[in-house]
Amino acid sequence: MHRWLMGILACLATLTLAPVYANSIENVRVWPAPDNTRVVFDLSETPAFSYFTLYDTKPYRLVIDFDNTNRKIDVSKVPTDSLLISKIRLSTPKDKQSTRIVFELTEKVDPTVFPLAANDRYGERLVVDLPGRSIARSAPVLRASDLKERKVTVAIDAGHGGDDPGSIGPAGTYEKHVVLKISRALADMINEDPAMQAYLIRSDDYYVGLKARTRKAEEIKADLLVSVHADAFTTPQPRGASVWVLSNRRANNEMGRLLEDKERLSDVLGGVEISIQTDDTYGYLNEALVSMSMDHAMASGYEAAEEIINEMKKITRMHKSKPQHASLAVLTSGSVPSMLVETGFISNPEEERLLLSNKYQQQIARAVYHGVRSYFTRKPPDGTYFATNRASKHVVRSGESLSVLAERYNTSVQAIKERNKLKSTVLKVGQVLDIPSSG
Image 1 (tube, one colour):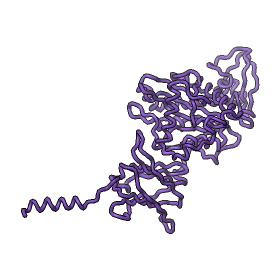
Image 2 (cartoon, rainbow, N blue to C red; image 1 turned 120 degrees about the vertical axis):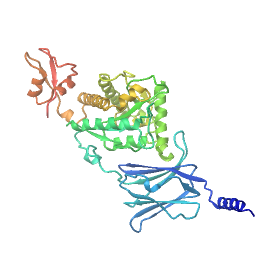
Image 3 (cartoon, rainbow, N blue to C red; image 1 turned 60 degrees about the vertical axis):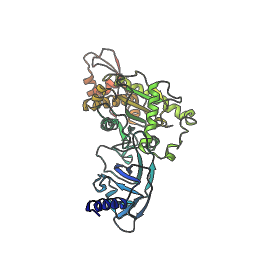
Image 4 (tube, rainbow, N blue to C red; image 1 turned 180 degrees about the horizontal axis):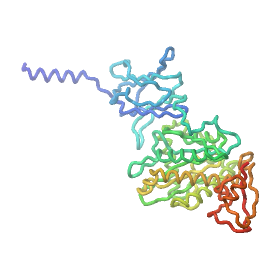
């Protein structure tokens, strides 16, 4: 037999003996959150898997076997940034057709492991949820245990996060990154105000389920929930900010319907399990909507939204000059007045550039802050600084100015302007002002 023929036959024999895999691990993503870590395996096909834990000795281990699967990445180089995971590594597989991946954990946890079907943005996935403290505390971020009972509490919800990027601008800007920066700036401003405190529902790049966002606001007994987003449309022309509040009817305009569809997509991309998606805690705009509590929350949310629009239109174009209505799960609290602030159209190239600007992010945050403060100045919750430090009346005399009055009453020029909705510092003799006291 010719030598070249023997070589071909040897190659064919090698190919015949090489394992053929039905699936492959394409990528691994790790999303640490304050109270859990989510790990997502991107796969070429629906996964066949099993898992077990080894907690007798340290390091504690979670072992996942992927049947009939190879891998296209080095899992040991996957960044974790999670306090729960010290290492991700390979181990000896149970057979030649399998891949075994080991998580070395810092704590014993009860993992949840489940597959997610492919959708428009992602292929087949396997999700691993590890409960427990996963990220170090960020200095400006308040925990629930830090909140003071007598301060007005504002829950700030940065939309999307983690596997859900939200809308994506023409230049590739992710909504989730922009709205987190605006939300953190807003939280800083509120926390600098002696009368208020902010609680960030999402403080970093991870996903929180829509119903969970509402529940977190209720758990801390928030006085207001502000959900921060960036709008998008199918064409680049629409522009401007808007504020949305809850409606007990389906949205009656195209933007509202797109917003509702986008919210449903968020839970799909975020990997919320079916059991969570169908958790109808509030009858999703049925029984709870007819309660007096819900009616009050909706009315209060609308009033607060009007104040925020009044401030936002001073610094940016408004797409809508009045609060808009849509049936959004993130706004369905029966006890917390809520609104969704669209900070601009990320699908518009000009507004995408604005949303990336730190100056614009600060301006939007400042406008929302002033609107929130104006609302609580008019409608102070019982027992709070706003309620116990009610305004005294002052009749302006000749020679008096806002700075003189601020010093006399131990308050600030800005506080007097906000209380009286003054657009300038010019006063008229005989003008009656409400002066907020310093307490």
